[in-house]
Amino acid sequence: MSNRHPDSDTVRAALALAVRAPSVHNTQPWQWRVGDRTVHLYVDDERGLPHTDPDHRELLLSCGAALHHFRVAARSFGWNTVVHRFPNPDDPKHLAAVEFVPVTPTADVVAMARAIDERRTDRRQPTSWEVPEAFVTTLVAAGVAEGAMVSEIPGGGTRIRLVEAFRAASAEHRTDDGYQSELARWSGRHADIEGVPARNAVLADDPLTREFHGSTLTEGILRDLDVHGRLLLVHTGSDDEMSRLRAGEATSAVLLSATVFGLATCPLTEPLELPGTRALVRTDVLSDSGFPQLIVRVGWAATSAARVPATPRRPLEDMVRPLE
Ligand SMILES: Cc1cc2nc3c(=O)[nH]c(=O)nc-3n(C[C@H](O)[C@H](O)[C@H](O)COP(=O)(O)O)c2cc1C
Image (tube, rainbow, N blue to C red; front, top):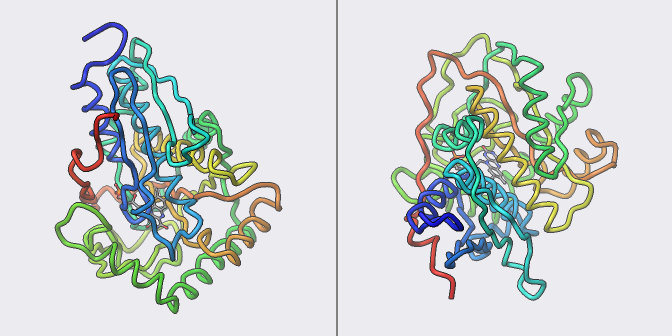
């Protein structure tokens, strides 16, 4: 190992962890290019969802999550990253150029990197066991440190209106042929390299859960469930591409920190995909003071519930190329 930049095996190992990041419908919309001393992230907009995500917000959130996963992995291998976001004004698909500086990894970052393989999107309702306040404070701080805002959605009227927004979005999507054909293309799979497998999509009467195709995952237990768990809203002061990328990085930080605590997590975006319900969330939850990007549900899975299986990924060779 050179002491000035990581060797190719180290970069490859960090990329193998980066692509475990969550992405909308498990589209994995990223391309990585590896140079002698730098690693570059590009958005692969051919893997976009024109009906579900027409303005590419979730595409960028997904790439932001992968960028944060990469940074955590590299740091755990002894390389701090220096990230130049949108380094080329003539190429908006070039999301980040990453340079490296040697660092001694801390136990915290090693725990975060370990959480990458442990994290799953768990769509089952969490139990009613309380999530300690200090844990929630840590999750919020982890997201905020990545350049977005994170707020817990309070109970009472705000939460009731949010659940209504989920129901309204789901009803609108049910009759949207374009949305439905994308869902059919990207979910209900059995053994594949992309998309949401049937075994990861839950069969439940839960307004927060997206109705994927062919769901076969059942609730682990049917009692002592918390209706919605704790809901953390990742939001930003503006809604440009940089804000979306940073919101994705913040989402990853929240998810991995929650996984370190042993909490189950689920990213949720359905009401933010439609202008009407998105405006409702903006007004009701943020009092028109910012832009909602993604909601993370956190809570304790039942100890008796089987572990959710890992979702598949495309081969690394499809997503990683040498820099030309
Ligand atoms: C931007 C974004 C939006 C997502 N929206 C939802 C959602 O609304 N409902 C849901 O159940 N999962 C959602 N997910 C989770 C993805 O479906 C999940 O990450 C993907 O299927 C890969 O599975 P994994 O997270 O278990 O690795 C979202 C993930 C991201 C990054």
